[in-house]
Every structure is written in C-alpha cells, then in structure tokens.
Image (cartoon, rainbow, N blue to C red; front, side, top):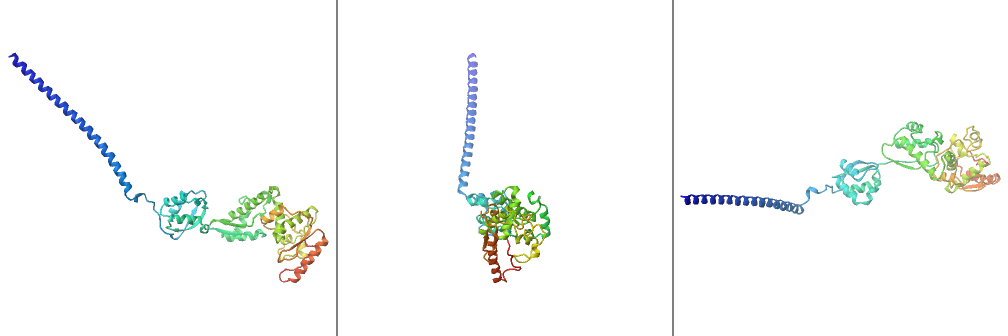
Length: 385
C-alpha cells in the first residue's frame, strides 16, 4: 500500500511541474511575440514615413507653388508706397490692389533684384494682374509716379509764386496767402521778420497728390535755408545776403555778371553811395519796361534806392543759387557802376568813375534808339546804376 501511494504522489507532482513549465513557455512566447510585433510596427512606421517623403519628392509641387500672373496686366490702379516700406510691405500693398497674384511672388522678385532698394516712396499708376517681375520694374520707373510738379523761375515776386502754388494745389490764391501768414507752420526763420519775399527758393519741385499750400511753402523755405547753409551763410546774415542776391537776380542777365554786380553793390555800400537801381523802384512801381521815370524815382518808398542810401528793407525777388553764390563770393574790383548795354544779349559794361559810366550809358541809349520796339520807354538816365 505504501508503494502505491508513493507512486501516485510522484506522478501528480510531475504532472503539475509539466503544466507549469508549459505555462511558462507560452508566456515567454507571448512576450516575444509582443516584442516582435511592437518592433515590426516601429519598422513599418519608419518605412512608411520614408516612403511618404520619397513619394512627395516625386510628385508635382502644386501645393507649394507661388501664384503669379503671366502678362503685363490690364486697367489702371493707384498704389501708394510709403516711406520706410519694406519689400514685404510693398508686396502686400500690390496684392491688396489686385496688381500681383500673391505677395510671395513680388517678394521673390524683390529679393533677387538688387535695384529694388531704389524704389522711391510715392503714388504709382499700375496695371492689375501684372507678373511680379513687371510690377517691380514699374515701381522702378519714375514715369509711373503720380506727381504734382511745379517750376518756379528765378527773379519773381512772392505774388507770382502764390499763383503758381494755387494752380498746383488746386487751392485759391487767397488760400495760399492765408497759409503764408502762418510762418511757424512753413518754417520761416525769425530773421525774415515775417516777410516771405526772397525766401521761396526758385526751382522745380515734385509733390504727391493732395499736397497743400503749406507743404509747398514749407519746402521752398527749407530749400532756401539749405542753400544758404551750403554757402556757409550764418543765420544772422541770411536776410542781408538774400537782399543782395535778389538785386543781383533782377539786374544780371548773364551768370558771369552776377559776382561782378554783387561787388558793385558792396563797393557802393562801403562808400555810402546810393545804389540807384531801377529794379528796387520797380518793386514798388511795377510799370512796364526795365527803366523808371522821374516820377517813380521820386517815390518816398524805402525801396527807392535813388533817394535812400543803403540796401532796401528786404529782398525784391526770389534769388536763385547762382545769385546767392555771387552775393556770398563777389568778384573783387573797384567798379562802382554797371549798365547793360544790350538788352537782348545781356552784355554789361562796368566803370570805376562816373565819366566812364556815362560813356557806357550812351552805348545803351544808342541801342535803345535802334531797338525802340524791343525796349520800353522811358529811356535810361545818364546816371542809371
């Protein structure tokens, strides 16, 4: 009996051990199966990603293509390029106006063309639906800018300048005159004592649409200040220099005579001689012709340099750069007189004595007689200038 029970016990224990071993083997296989499956999924994912990227390189890049038009465009639209605008800013402005198909197309052209930095701020006439490269070239073409241009010649009085400014800005002359009264807004220096005469620099100016009289007057005054600064004129000497320059501007016909006439002015002032310039009398008596009458020369106006010694109270016209330069750097001489002996050619004769000057005046009188229709009466006096 004992042997029988012992055999049964041994058999049962062996079976249990085998079942446990099988369970352990199955658990081990499941573990490795899971590991293999996970590893396979990782490999699959990596492979799929590589395959996707490779496929993308082979497929057309339609989704990343930059939109651009093909032609030169059509119609007309105005685009504003503001000061400080970057290429991206310009691109957005063009896109918003319907000029380019996408901002990116213009930025691409901007970055590849070194001339793009030369685009000037302003208002431009453009076509709609332009190829980006054409749009860039249009902005580089100054002929496409919408500008308001004014040309102010030398030697005119402020009233003439006001009329030109009114025509440019579509304001009335009265509006311009009113704007001129605000000397602070237009930047007129204190030494001008509120008088714009001589301070509106004659030149050609360009403005954007919507320009106002104040804008134009300010620009002209600032240009005069810049010219005086360029000539090294101290602020306290500006009014005097502009006054002398204005006399030179009205009296000289040729550039070569400007520094010579300026020297005559200074020589006379140094000797307390009356200037005796018809041009100053004409400032208060703007009659026809270049000569003045006895009645005009008898005026009590402080601008009458036949009656009063010294410079007139201020400039009598807008002097240009050449006349300002002459007033700053006159040509040294002992001349006290000058007279233009040919009103057509501008030929001018100079003299150190009154007797010499009278001879030159006779030459002018003869020219006037021979060209009576071209010159205005009255005839020049022997002591003119």
